Image (cartoon, rainbow, N blue to C red):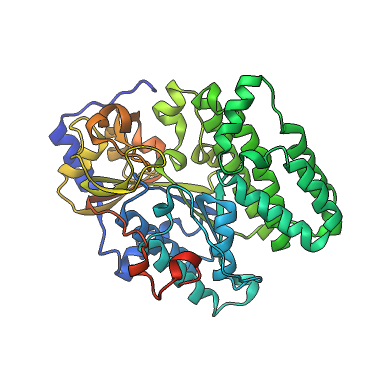
Length: 443
């Protein structure tokens, strides 16, 4: 962590942050979104979350995104979600064909996207797009690479429609991965044991062939080809991801975040020079890793860092935080979702400084030239809490806190002192019976 120099007492620091903090109105108040107009001229706005299961984070990101879409011309919403699942949502909100009843977000953690808060945003997107010309409709895209099975199926379905001969070649090449498509980690274990990449050449060759024949099939400006090409790229990256995941977390983490960044770059290029994107992802992905223990101790990079390094000031990173409340999370990977109580933030954390301001919710502008006294005062490294889909309160210090320099990590910070868990979708909460099986077609 960078050496530094401004150390202040807790009371003095709290007073400085209290003075700089801008109280936020209720999330449902149009004035809430208007507080973020200052980021409207940016090409990419990355909106974080301190957990994957907090209602206020989802609702706030939706309100900010609506404002950026309506007032500032953003047409891309890219999320920490799997591409094939997000494509199902995209077909609904942009009224793309074929609009068939298909499931999405069935894998763990299903509640991360199958929740009432996100469903309301999807419904708004669909209604908004219904009033727009096709070229002005907002798309929803997934940046992540976990749904290997869904991507293989999507590529094969696309090729079946336009070139059955190439589809047969793809089936042969992907046949190496198909036995592992439901449990890709098993492929990683096998590759580790055998000491070589069993399927690397096949999936890379398929991706190369697809792009080589792009004139025949379409171009990245064509939605169907873009979808197929991205799924093929996802398969190639997922093969590498699962192959290296047992060698250490840094290599697999870096491959995953590079994939997210490259997907975002592909979307911006495909949609044209004037395209603008909002990104929804966890703080650990959108905050600049160079100013956290991720980058300083574990040699990890992330999406926010890559955006800053390549976009020459045209990306803004906005983190979110909370002190206490409830959160939707599991105890173990692939475990059931539980509503858990969040421990009050630690005394040596950034969250405790925000809590001690006694402002229920606020925006802290951390850009250079804004609130310089607060920026300098907060530059001393402190702990920051990260809750993912797993939350273990009993080991929270070691499981969920990491060192960071907040004013360098983010361009702005959104605070909600007390938060509650998201509301997962269940059959009794659907708009009509049976919608659960065809989400998001129930919107």
